[in-house]
Image 1: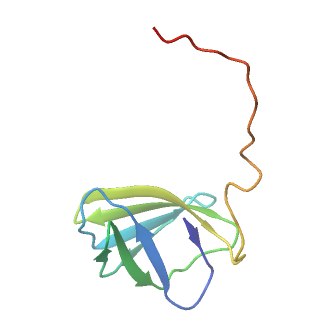
Image 2 (image 1 turned 120 degrees about the vertical axis):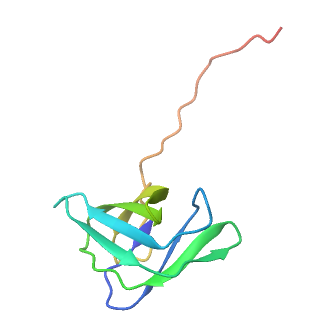
Length: 105
């Protein structure tokens, strides 16, 4: 997930294990500190979504955990950048040709 450093609310979207959530926690992987955000999440098709004002630092990774009460309904990673064309996978995937042949019986 890509998040931005902003003073405005931004949309946080994820696909949870159950479609009820009342809080997310963002843990900065560099400082190992967590911040909790309470929000009203709405189900949109097959994901949950909320507009939240987040306090983030640029170019940092965060562990995102979503809760329904004390139950964890989603765990994932987020990266904070203000680049609009940023892709976390840019230049990582390379394909290789192979001569492997399989015999199916």
